[in-house]
Image 1: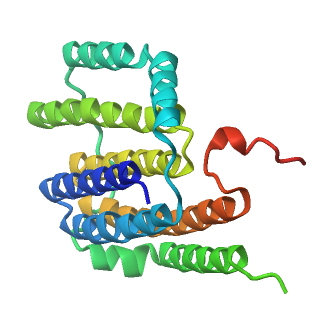
Image 2 (image 1 turned 180 degrees about the vertical axis):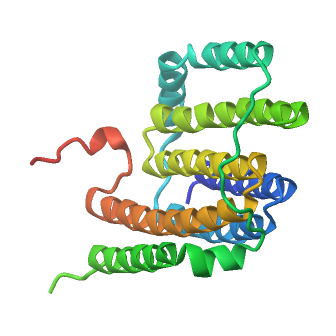
Length: 141
Length: 106
């Protein structure tokens, strides 16, 4: 198991936790709870499990890769800073037109009554994932 | 839309673009399959935040939340299969370095 990979996974979990705080602040508490429990918890567990089965690379190869990474993407930090500075100075007020839909405040009502086909899609996605994992780990006879 | 909401939109836009660039960098710079999947996960989080922000700005938070719940379930399905694929690749090739997985023949 590599500690660097585990550090990446912990970073992802912290990003999820931060995103759930933002969601809570943006009037979406139920989605925030889902994000915190599923993305920050379950997906981190999946990644840690996967990382625990892999082996670590040698220190020499690690140094080589670090050099390659910085040489290949030296322009990226400049692009990030340029985009952020441009956006900061280009903060024009925008007038969004709200869609002409009745405002529903109950998530459960929307999920179970109006978007019930989404639930079928969710079930299909979960079943497809289960079948996929079964096929991937099927032992050869 | 009030000026306050417009300001919120721009602040979140800057944040979303920064996180999106981080996700893209994560995918492009690494040769490790697990880190590439983590980059995909970060990009999915950007999409999630955009949906929630859209719901907040248009007063349709409930609809946005129902969409995000669906997105999270699909995300879990993708990640489970991706994790399984990485384990299978490691089992067969003894590496998860993308440069060494170039011998696929169609």
